[in-house]
Amino acid sequence: MVAPFELCPRSLALRVALGLALALHLTMAISVATQSVGFNRPRAATRPLFWRLHNDAAHRVGPGADFFAIYHAGVQRAAGVSPYEHAERQRRTPDFYGFRYLPFAAQTLGRAAQALPPRVAYLTWLALLELLLGATLWCVGRQLGEERWRAFAWIALLVSTPYWLELHMGQFTFATFALLFCGLAALEAGRWRAASLGLAAAALLKVFPLAALAAVLRQRRGFVVCCLVAGAVVAVSLPYFAAHPEDWRRFAGANFGGAATAGMHSGNHGTLYVLHLLGDAVLGRWPAAGFARFAALWQMLALGGTAALVLWARPRALLGGAALMFAHVASYKEVWEHHYSGVVVAALALLACELAAGHRRRAQLVAACVVALALPTPFVLIDHTPPEVVDPSRGWALWARVLLPACKALPTLVLWALALRSIAAQRGGAQAENAAATARSAAVTSSAES
Image 1: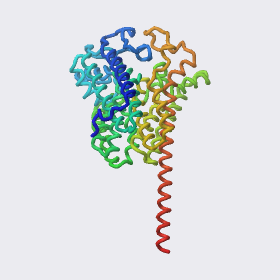
Image 2: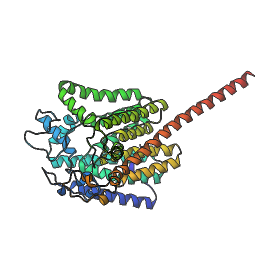
Image 3: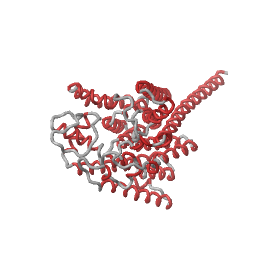
Image 4: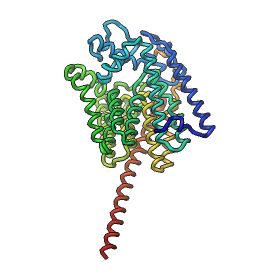
């Protein structure tokens, strides 16, 4: 076991840089934690220090509106009401978004949270996110051997602006990615029980980590881990949905259905949103049915093709998991800016894999993508609308509407391509090594016979 202080860089310059990054991080976290929560508050009143940098901090309800979705679900379950039912019998929850997660989250996190006053519950969740960030710093530090790369990764995590937004919203994406990649690292270290626990916890928070099981299946003990993770999700979800089929329809509609163009607004920072904007520019207006078919085909090809390559090539769990997560984010219809707090974690996992394989130039390109993901978009320079405007992009020029999501979508596409290239190269290298070994063995046999 490596103690955290043993991973700290010895270079004074790197220590100073880390100290400054930590100070900036704590300043932003405190600015989030000192906000008050309330009911039907004007958007202008919900302002952390960085509020002008992000659409969702400037033009959406908050703070903690996503966390209070879980809180609201706990309130509903305590009252014997569906967690997917929006209206409360007696309003307890501050401003919140609709609950769209598995019922297990409502029955555990939600019930625990609603036992506390709303502000105390929100601050507790912020503290848990910070603890998970600390665990991720340690896990990433162990994967990176050189202290300058380790310092780079730590600084990127500490000053990641999508993570600051994640804190403000009280979201679960970073927590999900952190649990996922700590679980994959544990699997590589041979700790399959810890891996099962981390991966199951990630999948129970949000279902998309199930896509990473393709990277687990062909690892040592991978089949057992996959069975445990999938079994845990089914065991805690199937009985509830079987007893409440209407809730299954609500859950499936929120996560896998909905209108074809739902989420196509200024808060979206996904690849499909960029393609939707460009399609509208070319076609005049992209028909909703046509876009729905294109989005479904794109997601099937992206995730299915990446999973097939991972199963065929059998790369490291971290490398395969990173590729699958890039494919998910690049192909999902509703990708918000805070989602990239998790993509930074996946990118750092890819960075560790590239450095371990000796691919220095690819590692530098991955690092450039990490910087692009961690920095804010030019939103503050483009948006001049008041906070009460829900979709400020309606009056923007096309280039501005495309630029902001492209600042996050394009680096993700580059990372995905790099991960796929590394997986394919690894498979080709393994085949060449096997062929050479076979040739050597044949030569030795022939020599012995002669």
